[in-house]
Length: 76
Image (cartoon, rainbow, N blue to C red; front, side, top):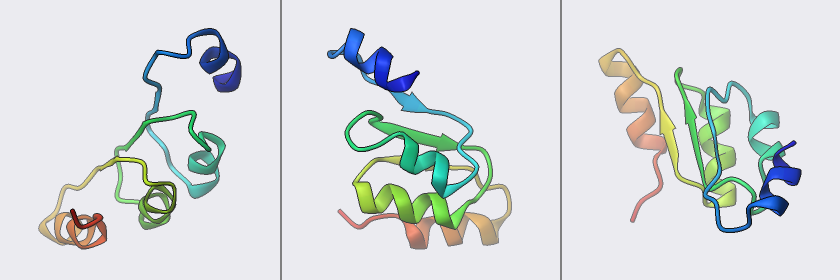
């Protein structure tokens, strides 16, 4: 469905939300999704987004989760 929508609207910025695993992340690529968001800290999703150079908004609640997400974030 994402491929079809991206073909119909080539100038539209697509993103995936509530991504819970790396396989779903991989399904949004290459070049089809410009951003990913997930509501839980999923290191495999962060790793996959870094591989494809896609911004990711990781969910984190506890200080440990926040620090873990920050450590996995790409450096500028």
